[in-house]
Length: 335
Image (tube, rainbow, N blue to C red; front, side, top):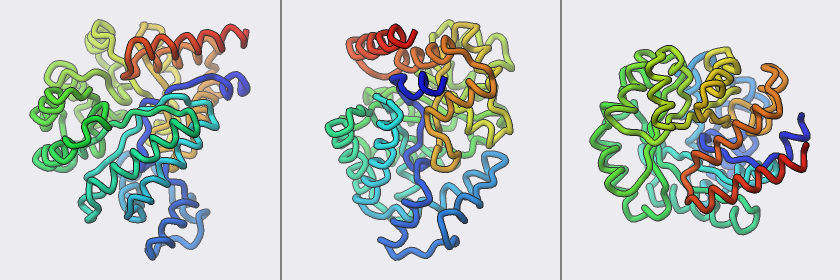
């Protein structure tokens, strides 16, 4: 099973570039930018990763971004992730980035996106990893800030495929950002939103994603199973879910394997992703292997999760057909 997963061509649709910051790179960037860290070694950083819910994770996640200062820093961050992705046979990625987490620290939007884009170009040319970038808004900031950052992004629309919504969900419903997402749609961007596991008002938030925002897919989305009508609506609209098992195990102490299996059984396009692998200590292969080892997922189920990811990727029909053909060719060889 491990060999099968390692050689499987994969797509990743839910990974935060800031969340791929490994402790070793954190120390390297801190030294480069003359920043003092509250840790003496990378091992101490990992020891501090004692997450038990979403807020406790974010309390460590945002301060760590302080080491990212220059265009070169963002290039190094993104390239380190793409190298890891290539090593795990991830051939296509739609990574998130959080510009507000940087502009509020005095780092310009241009610095952030130019560094990331340069890494995307090099990763495709040198590693064979194609990517399209999704800009996320922080939902615990106001809608005016989101709108301002969408305006900052307009000169770079060719570098973006979509917009998302992440960070602390409590009392920050999708409706708060309806106008911003409407404008993003007008600009030709695709729409997704986080619906994190077991958050306050999560089911109403998911209905807002569907009926008010009109999202193209949902990030996480496990709690759709709490409402049978919601599951039916997601299925009817053929919406994909980007689920992150190891992340779930940290945040809600559950790999959510059985829930993922339920989605597959209902024909819903559930996918597996790594979320913030620098913090949760698991990239794509580790997430799929965890499902195989701890939730007894079969090769067929792993293959379906992978097929779903290519099926809901924001690529042309021709590209999608080629990715799926490559996947089918691998599965035929692996029989």
